Length: 108
Image (tube, rainbow, N blue to C red):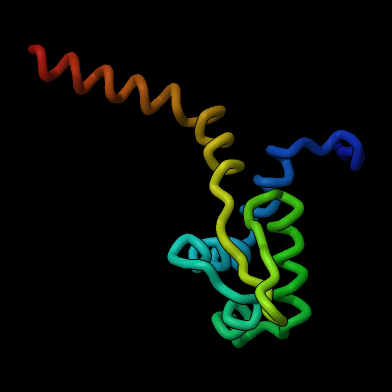
């Protein structure tokens, strides 16, 4: 089954972006602190700059990172809201049930 480009949702873009181990490594680095494009490229010496920039574009389209220009550099940060949206949709009900179980155990 094929999905047309006009059928791809924001959540689909997030899942597709997270499917790549390289992009997850980039997000892990951005979770720790803000990085420049150059510093992210340096974290992945096995990849050329063009490939890293392509991965960053995928993350930007999924709205998983934000960037701002500071002089000649571009500073990138993790944007957690798309991941929170995924959490709320797929995980929060299970987490709530686990908390309720712990509460029940505490009362018993």
